[in-house]
Amino acid sequence: MLIVYSGDETLVELCMDLFVKEDTVKQLSGKNNLNSLQITGKDILIIDFEFCREKDLPQIICPALVLVTVPVNAQAMRLLRRGIRAYGNRHMHEENLRQAVSALKAGQIWLPPAIINRMITALPSNKNEKKDDTWLKELSSREAEVAKWLVNGLSNREISEKMFISIRTVKAHLTSIFKKTGCHNRLELATRMK
Image (tube, rainbow, N blue to C red; front, side):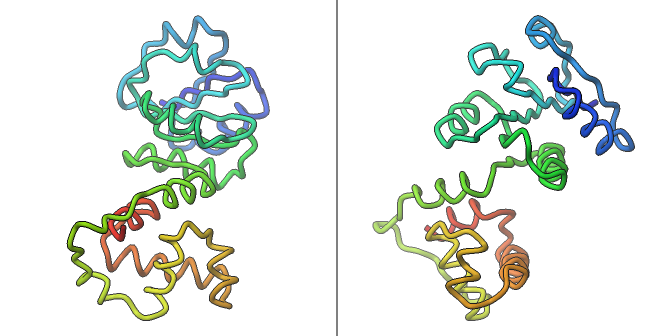
């Protein structure tokens, strides 16, 4: 079941339209409902922070997406530590909302690209450890260049500008890189490379 905790009828209707074919969608509003809700680990919870404060969050036992007006890196990190698995703008594009819910269903984390890029940039380099870069040899020279820029925290648009290629081509290179390396996302690839 997909549970939407929000009093915003527009958001609730959007979730109904996007997910009703594959899930039962239920709306909740009011602080007491969230704390007393009978949730299973198979449910997906979408929490609208326009109607709930961070300090009012109960213990999270199911995959949950928090929607805020302006995503902030520090808040994203606090919520990840509390068990929230997805975080984003409450006015995000429909496709991004669909991706976030799909990621939760697959047991993955979903964050806005800007926050992921900040996390990648903040990763320390392991200069003392001997690196095993043999898996990088499977990449073409252009894929290796895309991977290098990704590890430096650049967005797809910034990579396309640096390499003088389209964003679509960057995405194609990333798909190939993920397939060849077995990494599932940008953060996993950056962690492995650093």
